[in-house]
Image 1 (cartoon, helix red, strand yellow):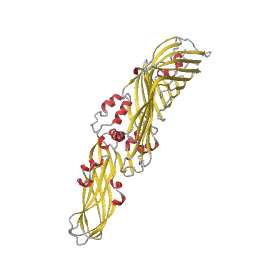
Image 2: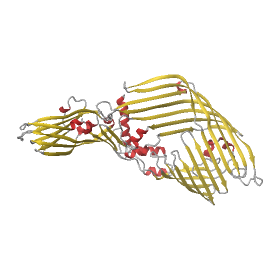
Image 3: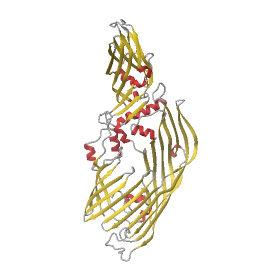
Image 4: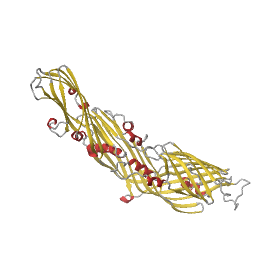
Length: 427
Length: 184
């Protein structure tokens, strides 16, 4: 169903804290079948760098896409010569096929990764500890350098070709206390509440109830380590690209900031909160989850400036300050989801807005007897719509599902297609 | 430090190439563009007949190329395309167009072994165009240096000429191509 978050999907439980209070619906357990392993074992890229067929981009694609799924189509391998043309006042670098590996808007990666959660719950209340890592890295080429490398545009005189780096990473443990409650619950007159023969009689997703679930969980953030780097580097060409003197002047300035508990720094300290609500009405579902609302951590940091001087041809590192107070931010993530369940049909959609990307998922599932048909679409992190479709068959408590999906999880960020399969265990 | 920085930039290129299997980094250098325009076309003579070896140094120049290429690549092959035109007005001669490319450390570019030796036969009142391509390990080693010295010399043998040799030479092409493989 295109990976849509709903209150019924266990994988979505962390996306909206109010989901904790919603009774379980049709809980299934999916066991993915690693059908892609056979494909990789049969035809895997070489790891031998001296092998003529060695291709680092193939390996990178393999690492970033563990072969659980069967690749149906994939982008053409990046494979070409690299040509450099040099003349007294001309330089052209033609990366040919490699140009496809240079993204339009730089290299952006990151996210907030909850490693696991340990906790206990009593009725509506819960306590949990969640080790978390937040990473953000944005590396960009400026327009001139991007055109020179991606479009093989000749380098010109008196022009700066620069890069921009802005990255940070922080590790912390969230100590969280919260509650998820149901302040509103009203059943229609004809509802079969507490019907023992109907396992879904108390499921607000399907019993037509008007219900509201809300949750909130403030958290103390215990910071273990923080590091950031922000700066620019570039080369500026002279009047003549290749004269008798140095062809370029070089500049580089980076400010780094770090703090680590294990490096005799005091731990970071801060607060944040997760809040959420989900509303059901006549089998419609509308949820809003906001995670890391106002989450900030105060650190005692060491700040260093690294500057390259072209005139002295040397790097200098200056300690700007020690124990400098700095407040880092854990980016907020907002998840809005909607669903409609009607008999054998489920329609669902969500929107996930986070620091570096906004994703949208829509999906539909229809059961026809023992057969299920599913379809969906999602806007991926590259801003490209992808499509999924599949089918499943259920035999008692066991089901088999097969799906085809497009994606662009590859170095080239080009569309590819894959097939996945799984067993499903039904209650 | 500057060298390290440039090395890092250049090293990115073979690393990109490393992503492409057994692919090459092809470095093409328009050597002619580095010569002073006044050196590209020069008049020679009058050179009296009956002399076996008269040399005219056309150009001698130091130029900066891409730093760091030698450190991150292994050279597979190198070639130099040469083109020249001799508009000879009087006399006849056997001419050798000698091209020198050597490390910038060399004291005198003309004391090295020439990269290319192109024979040309000049006749009175005729324009002679020559075009050839040579391969050379020495050329390959030179073109991946940070800085090189380039020299052009013309050696005239006028022993068979009754009248002085005189005319204009023009270098029309000096294009070096070095094919390297990744070293990293």
